[in-house]
Amino acid sequence: MQLITRHLKGFWEKLGKREKPSVDTNSSIDPYPTFPPPTPEELLARPNFYRERLFQRQYRTPRGDSEDKPLYGLYRLYEHLILNDNIGLRNELEYFWYARWPIVSIPDPQNACKSRYAVLAAIPALLLESYNDRINLGLPRKADSIVSREELEQYQKEEKMFESLPEWSNQVPRLEETLVIPHDDNEVLDSFEDIRASPQLAAKNILHWQPHIHFI
Image 1 (spheres, rainbow, N blue to C red):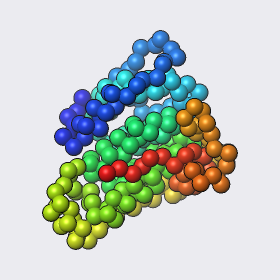
Image 2: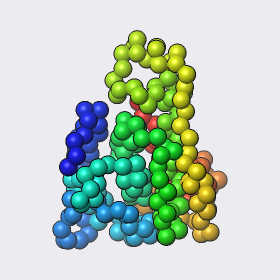
Image 3: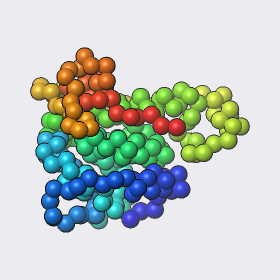
């Protein structure tokens, strides 16, 4: 397992403290992820099973590949989003931020599954809103997780370098049939008119609550 910098250790310690859901199968848990992940339909058909696999995962990258990459980060964000794992999603957002991967550097996953491809294409827009909000507050990507008042004041004087979307994410077509992702207790939104619906996901015809994408 690759080393994790001191800025990221705390995020994964928090994951281990969460209550784990009951699993609906007795099959063994693979400590490595398999990418690309299952389709949204498969994840939503067995959410407890896949959440358990996610919580028991020990490695961030697939077996035989020790180097973490922006595409792997995108896949992990996808899993947390589909499985409505808000804490995991937030932790992964922070990890991606401190890994300092530019959003525009996320490569095109070129996925054959239309629903999975649409979700993957919507995620960079969520990152964009989260990260540009922090940058607008004077927190650049180069800043450490803990900054002094003097450092913050200096950052706020510097020219802001905002993030941009990878071109492929805008080219992925909107789904013909709405993909509905349940929230807690299997609750779903009735329509995109609900103010709680995510506009970034709605752009790809995906109906779900706006995730918790902002962090300090």
